[in-house]
Length: 133
Figure 1: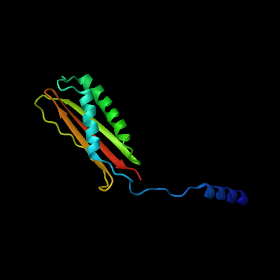
Figure 2 (figure 1 turned 180 degrees about the vertical axis):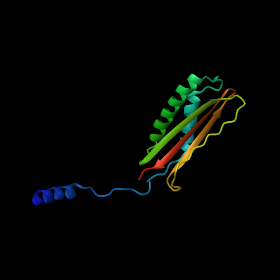
Figure 3 (figure 1 turned 90 degrees about the horizontal axis):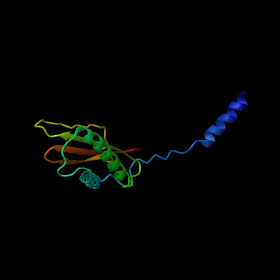
Figure 4 (figure 1 turned 60 degrees about the vertical axis):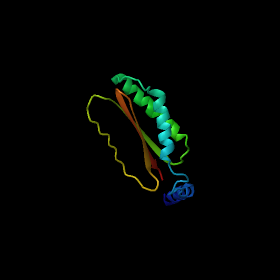
């Protein structure tokens, strides 16, 4: 039984791979490019004279978030994870505070935001980029 275990252990040791962790990204996340992407997508989906509707806001927020995420991923930032949040609300003389927190490494992680508003609605797009070691 000992010989069988020894043979299996050797196979496991031989098939293990070396650590390939990269501690720093080759290119860092550019928040200005991400903001430009968010602005283009919001301009595409929300007209300047659009009137707020709850059902429309629900579906449009999902569409904008998906499209922004896909376009930001095409910027080819290897080893980054992206979180895109879209908030759409109605203007009715109320105050709104959007807050987001995350643990970040100041050298590699970043975020970008874009805000849009017209007479009846507001929209905030928040893009968070976290480097994945």
